[in-house]
Length: 460
Image (cartoon, rainbow, N blue to C red; front, side):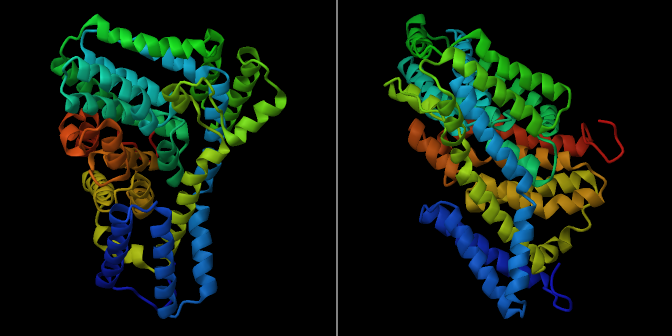
């Protein structure tokens, strides 16, 4: 809460927020800095503002700590996700998953198959950008050689990759969206099915209509990639057991930490079956430092070298800093002043629309999907509680209008990466990234109709 007797006028709060957004947007998009530095700069600015408002430095520091504390659940899950990815790599779970996904490819309805396969791969590895940079690039080469419009190909790749990112329990954004509003990870994923399945089906149908037929000789190029995966010696049916135990425990509604720990433990045991010259020391070391692939094949090593607690430090540090900034904004009364105009938002349609607009707006201004989730979640969670809506409604909107919108923004982190990786301008593939375009529209439609909107007291 802000200091007693000190009130922040809405116009002053909007001015402060405008300065922060302008500063962060300039540093992220123009200076191409990682988000951490702009956030630190804004924290220092808010500390100076607080001191000018006669708040004590002790109270300001406490506000930062309290803000960061709200994200501890997400931080703990991030550690387990890092360990899960590395253990699934060592056990052959993810390589087997990739091999089976590539089996789906055929010369008919090629764009639809590309969308589906990148979605499967994205779910398996929990990273949209890695999926696009590896399997996506391979698909793009085949499609370009077959004479398919590169913008169509890039749109299907981006859509599939971000479907996987959004729905994977390994994804940092999925964990962040559920953690920031205190929703069980797997309850969050289950609730997203309401909007994600219609978006997936519609997108798949559009890609089927758009797809040309390509030759079998072009498809054969992917067989080489599959043979490379098999050549690692990690493809095995037993390697799918960690996924099975994960699914079973999710269905039994076990806690995320118990579920992830069980899958990690089983994967480590399987790693002793599929790995050569494997030791207990190596098995435990990879939990921190990640799995290192040494096949000598660049694309394959890039895809398989992943995971470990260490790999999550970028995300964890960003979450802590952003939440600390949020704690200052809350303590100084800036968030409350900004939300004064939104206090009347008790109707479901207006609340969900405002949430989606805010998440999209932050993506457009800052080009950063983490911040679109963090700042929007912090700003609206009280409104959802007062309106009697379950927090999982909020976490779903954060993903529908936050996570999947970022690759559509040319100056965003994802937009810049994808354009440079796929060599297709963001503005060119955007009209064909059907899943990313449909997701926010469907979440708005469900907010308007009340479909799948859960209220406190409901059993669902």
